[in-house]
Length: 253
Image 1 (cartoon, rainbow, N blue to C red):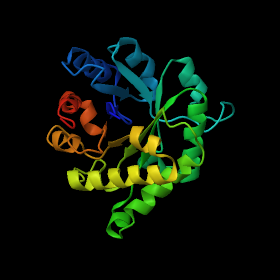
Image 2: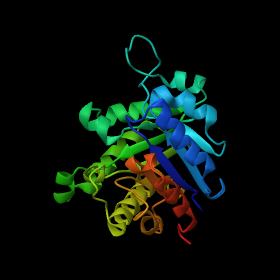
Image 3: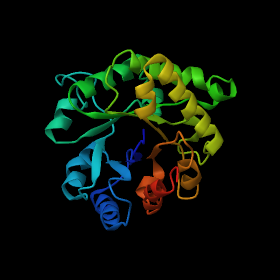
């Protein structure tokens, strides 16, 4: 089964009204492959979601960077899945390592978020990944499989889930997993899904890579058989994001 290439741009906690307009203008004018070739999802901070959605080209979608674990109410500062649906925001990023580390979101809490977001009609980019200490201890597969297992225990339908493998040691550090390292983890994850969920899910679910992806390394990474795209951080705020989207053309070619 051919898996459509997926490129997400996570702007994190960055931007002003003027900067957002500048980035969106760049994206709107960019010559990139068609929707048949690549799915592009842009994730600005919450406050800019309506602004971006209103002016972003129609072949790109928008994502929130987080959503609360249940229906809204007395949860100051949180954003509910229902609010995102009301704003017609189709995607949400959940379980990013920065939230797992800084806000101590556990595997189970992330899994509950994923399940609730899906139940409300959102599509989910679910993030997993190991720290440098865990990699050096040979624990990478154990860590990412436990993170994935928590999600698998809470959901049945994977059709609206994209798994984003982001080694924590490569996020914003300038370090990047080699194509061989990325492919190894992606292949192991796909094998885990085949054994523990189903062969159909393993074959169809997109597993994307994140961690200091840029214009210089995206082509070789995109060529790996089990790398189905990218979740891009810092480079998604720059012109080189267009080059990363274009790497879909060389993917598995």
